[in-house]
Length: 177
Image (cartoon, rainbow, N blue to C red; front, side):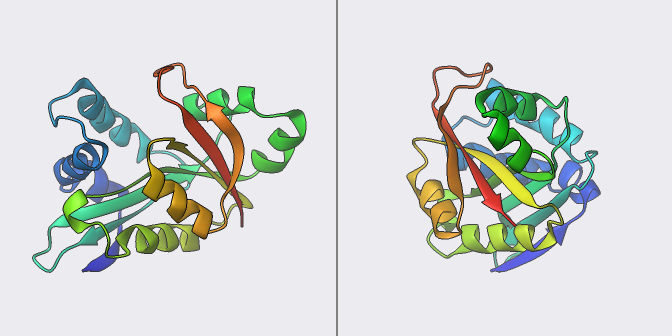
């Protein structure tokens, strides 16, 4: 297994289909579901954001089995505005002033348990020049929550409900860099 940096062109181009396969398998969605198809469109937008950085985990045959990516948080972006509304004034000034958004980190279930999530997290965070990082994690994603806790992330908002999926509880986490 190896972890390699991916360019924006890699993510939106030759690796996009594999990335969406990992995304769907990791979250238990059908590859043809609306959620996976809309994720493809989102990824194509995300690669053009300031500070975009991405990493892929590859098996010995060169197949993508995990990925992580994020970008600099900017006012006006949908996720940031949703989180901004849930934070206190003090939290906003501390966490949003110079933040990186860890947007996605997923490992295919067949490749889990090999520390790829940790490796993808650490590789991405080493590239970040911002003072803080933010992410949201589903409550049901216990392995992910354990990974982030082990890396020093702290809960900023315990029960976040995004307008796009109000039935699914998330937590918003922050990491001082």
